[in-house]
Image: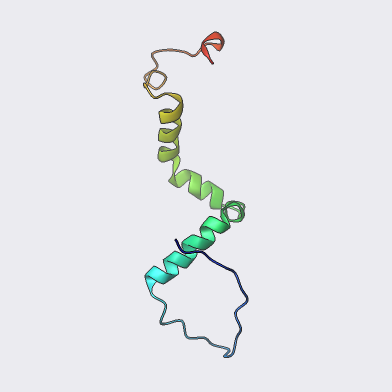
Length: 86
């Protein structure tokens, strides 16, 4: 796995040539930054809302798999009563 170590870049030329960087290298670096700064990214205005909208169905599915593995609640076949909860 690739790790990102943030270090200041020494600038020797005012315009650096990044043409040698391919998409795979760029995506690998970007993914490392996203993993490292996920909390910061989600605090940027509008980002959390965009992520929740995009992953709405997947998040619902994960909740259902964890809390209603038999599909009883989703099918409306029963109600969870206080005394039934662990």
